[in-house]
Image 1: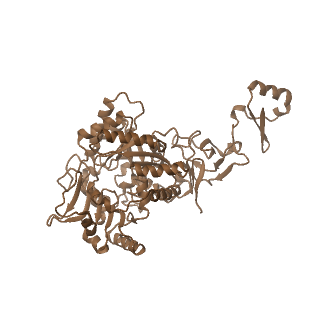
Image 2: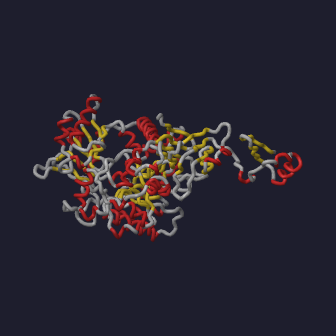
Length: 582
């Protein structure tokens, strides 16, 4: 059988018979076909595209320059130049003109708390509140528009908004005197509550600190100040309204719509539970989960056999969500003096609050590694980072029977000892970092750097050092710690400045990345972190068709203006899921 399709004036031939039969047919039955027959049979496309994007600038991490992409079903069929695109276009092909703008892979957020972020969209948003006055105005505006809410919930305040680096319940009591108020800080490691919440939770001057947590108390009176650090936050968990399965499903839907507007096509959940997984899974089965997912289950200190068995059961139950990692926490954060350092803080006689003993961390990581898990560990201070590096090294040395490749990773890595930087490449570990955390705002300079001290602050968020020493770097946001939008993080990665250009010289400017390196960490680097680099992260024939078409050529604008670019179109799984109205 032979089928031919007319494309303009060129007759293209498809065949399903042997080469010999085709040759006989051409020689004896259709000799006129030889006239003007220019393409070799091997060069002819076997199928036309469903969608093509032309007249663009395809960003490629490996030196290839192209202007067009053809997509068939959910895969990239071809990447090349506009002059060769016509052969892939059929009568039903949808053609998109990029008008000279960049075409990039879809963003892959390597560290996100998607359900928390999606639910927080309905709460008080304080991420853009740089000072106490703005926090007050934001809270009061929320109360006016939500007069009947029984519990006031919000998140996002910065430590730098307060003179002492921490708020006090008396401030919140003035705004919300009659019901519980629970405002989580931007990093999620500290909670600010009012007196009503303390009373309902039974927290007073006699309440002892829970294990791995701190109830901050006034040094003179012993009364709680309304600040709860780390695990102490759980003392008020029962005051939060519990979202239903449908609440979570609807929140995820809204989160997906936001992700598409921002060009995000993949997410990696950094620690979740069975209830959240059930919400994702129900949407997946109904065809509504229009994001690629990688799920990390949450581990904890002191895990017993039953805990490891439960992890295994959940991995099996939610395999369709790509559930193959476990997330651990080894320390807290520098702003609240709970990240683990190698020597005391510059302004406190403490080196932090380790959440594991060295032996328990080593035991946990060794067992997870033996059971073929990918392991993610929150490690912010240089002492916590070293604990994790040592534990990973021991596990790698002691387990020679592992069948799957290791893609173990450290999350955040805000501070690190100089001698530990090359160990990432040596051990094959991934530096999973969130560049917007390094934004040099008041929080960074007035609290983070002051707590850490000038010498250690020189090694702040050293993503370029990791790349220069051969390590893999993956970028994400940590939403809702910061917003889900990747662009401000790209700006910080490239400039080490705020969006307004401060400081002019940059914060640790030696760690600036170029556009290609920053984008690559957010796409191919993130795909590598989840062992999906052969499926996505670059624009190459055969890979999944997850693409972003921008409103401009990203490589043609000044570095400090890249964050102003907007997503014109997001293509997920070969289909347009977002298209700008502008």
